[in-house]
Length: 90
Image 1 (tube, rainbow, N blue to C red):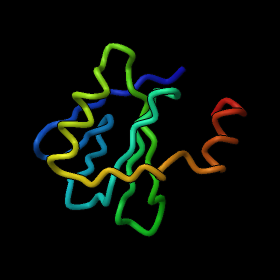
Image 2 (cartoon, one colour):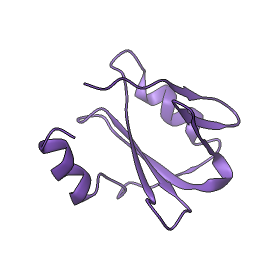
Image 3 (tube, rainbow, N blue to C red):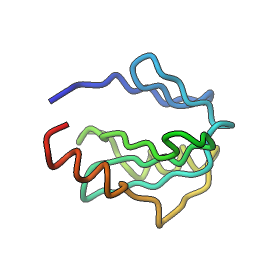
């Protein structure tokens, strides 16, 4: 499996070299069962972002931190396309 460097701080969320500042994001959701953080971007292209959450991360702490910057959207989840790609191993 591919590994990612993910950093979350007061400025935004960085995945490898790609940075998402909070002003470019609409909302988030955490799916504890799948171990995923879902972000909704304001960008028209690829508005949904899915980031794996390592097991050692406390998801309640993560949610509390992100609530300082983003709205929680309970309906935000992985798109059908992302689910198919994951199933196929991409």
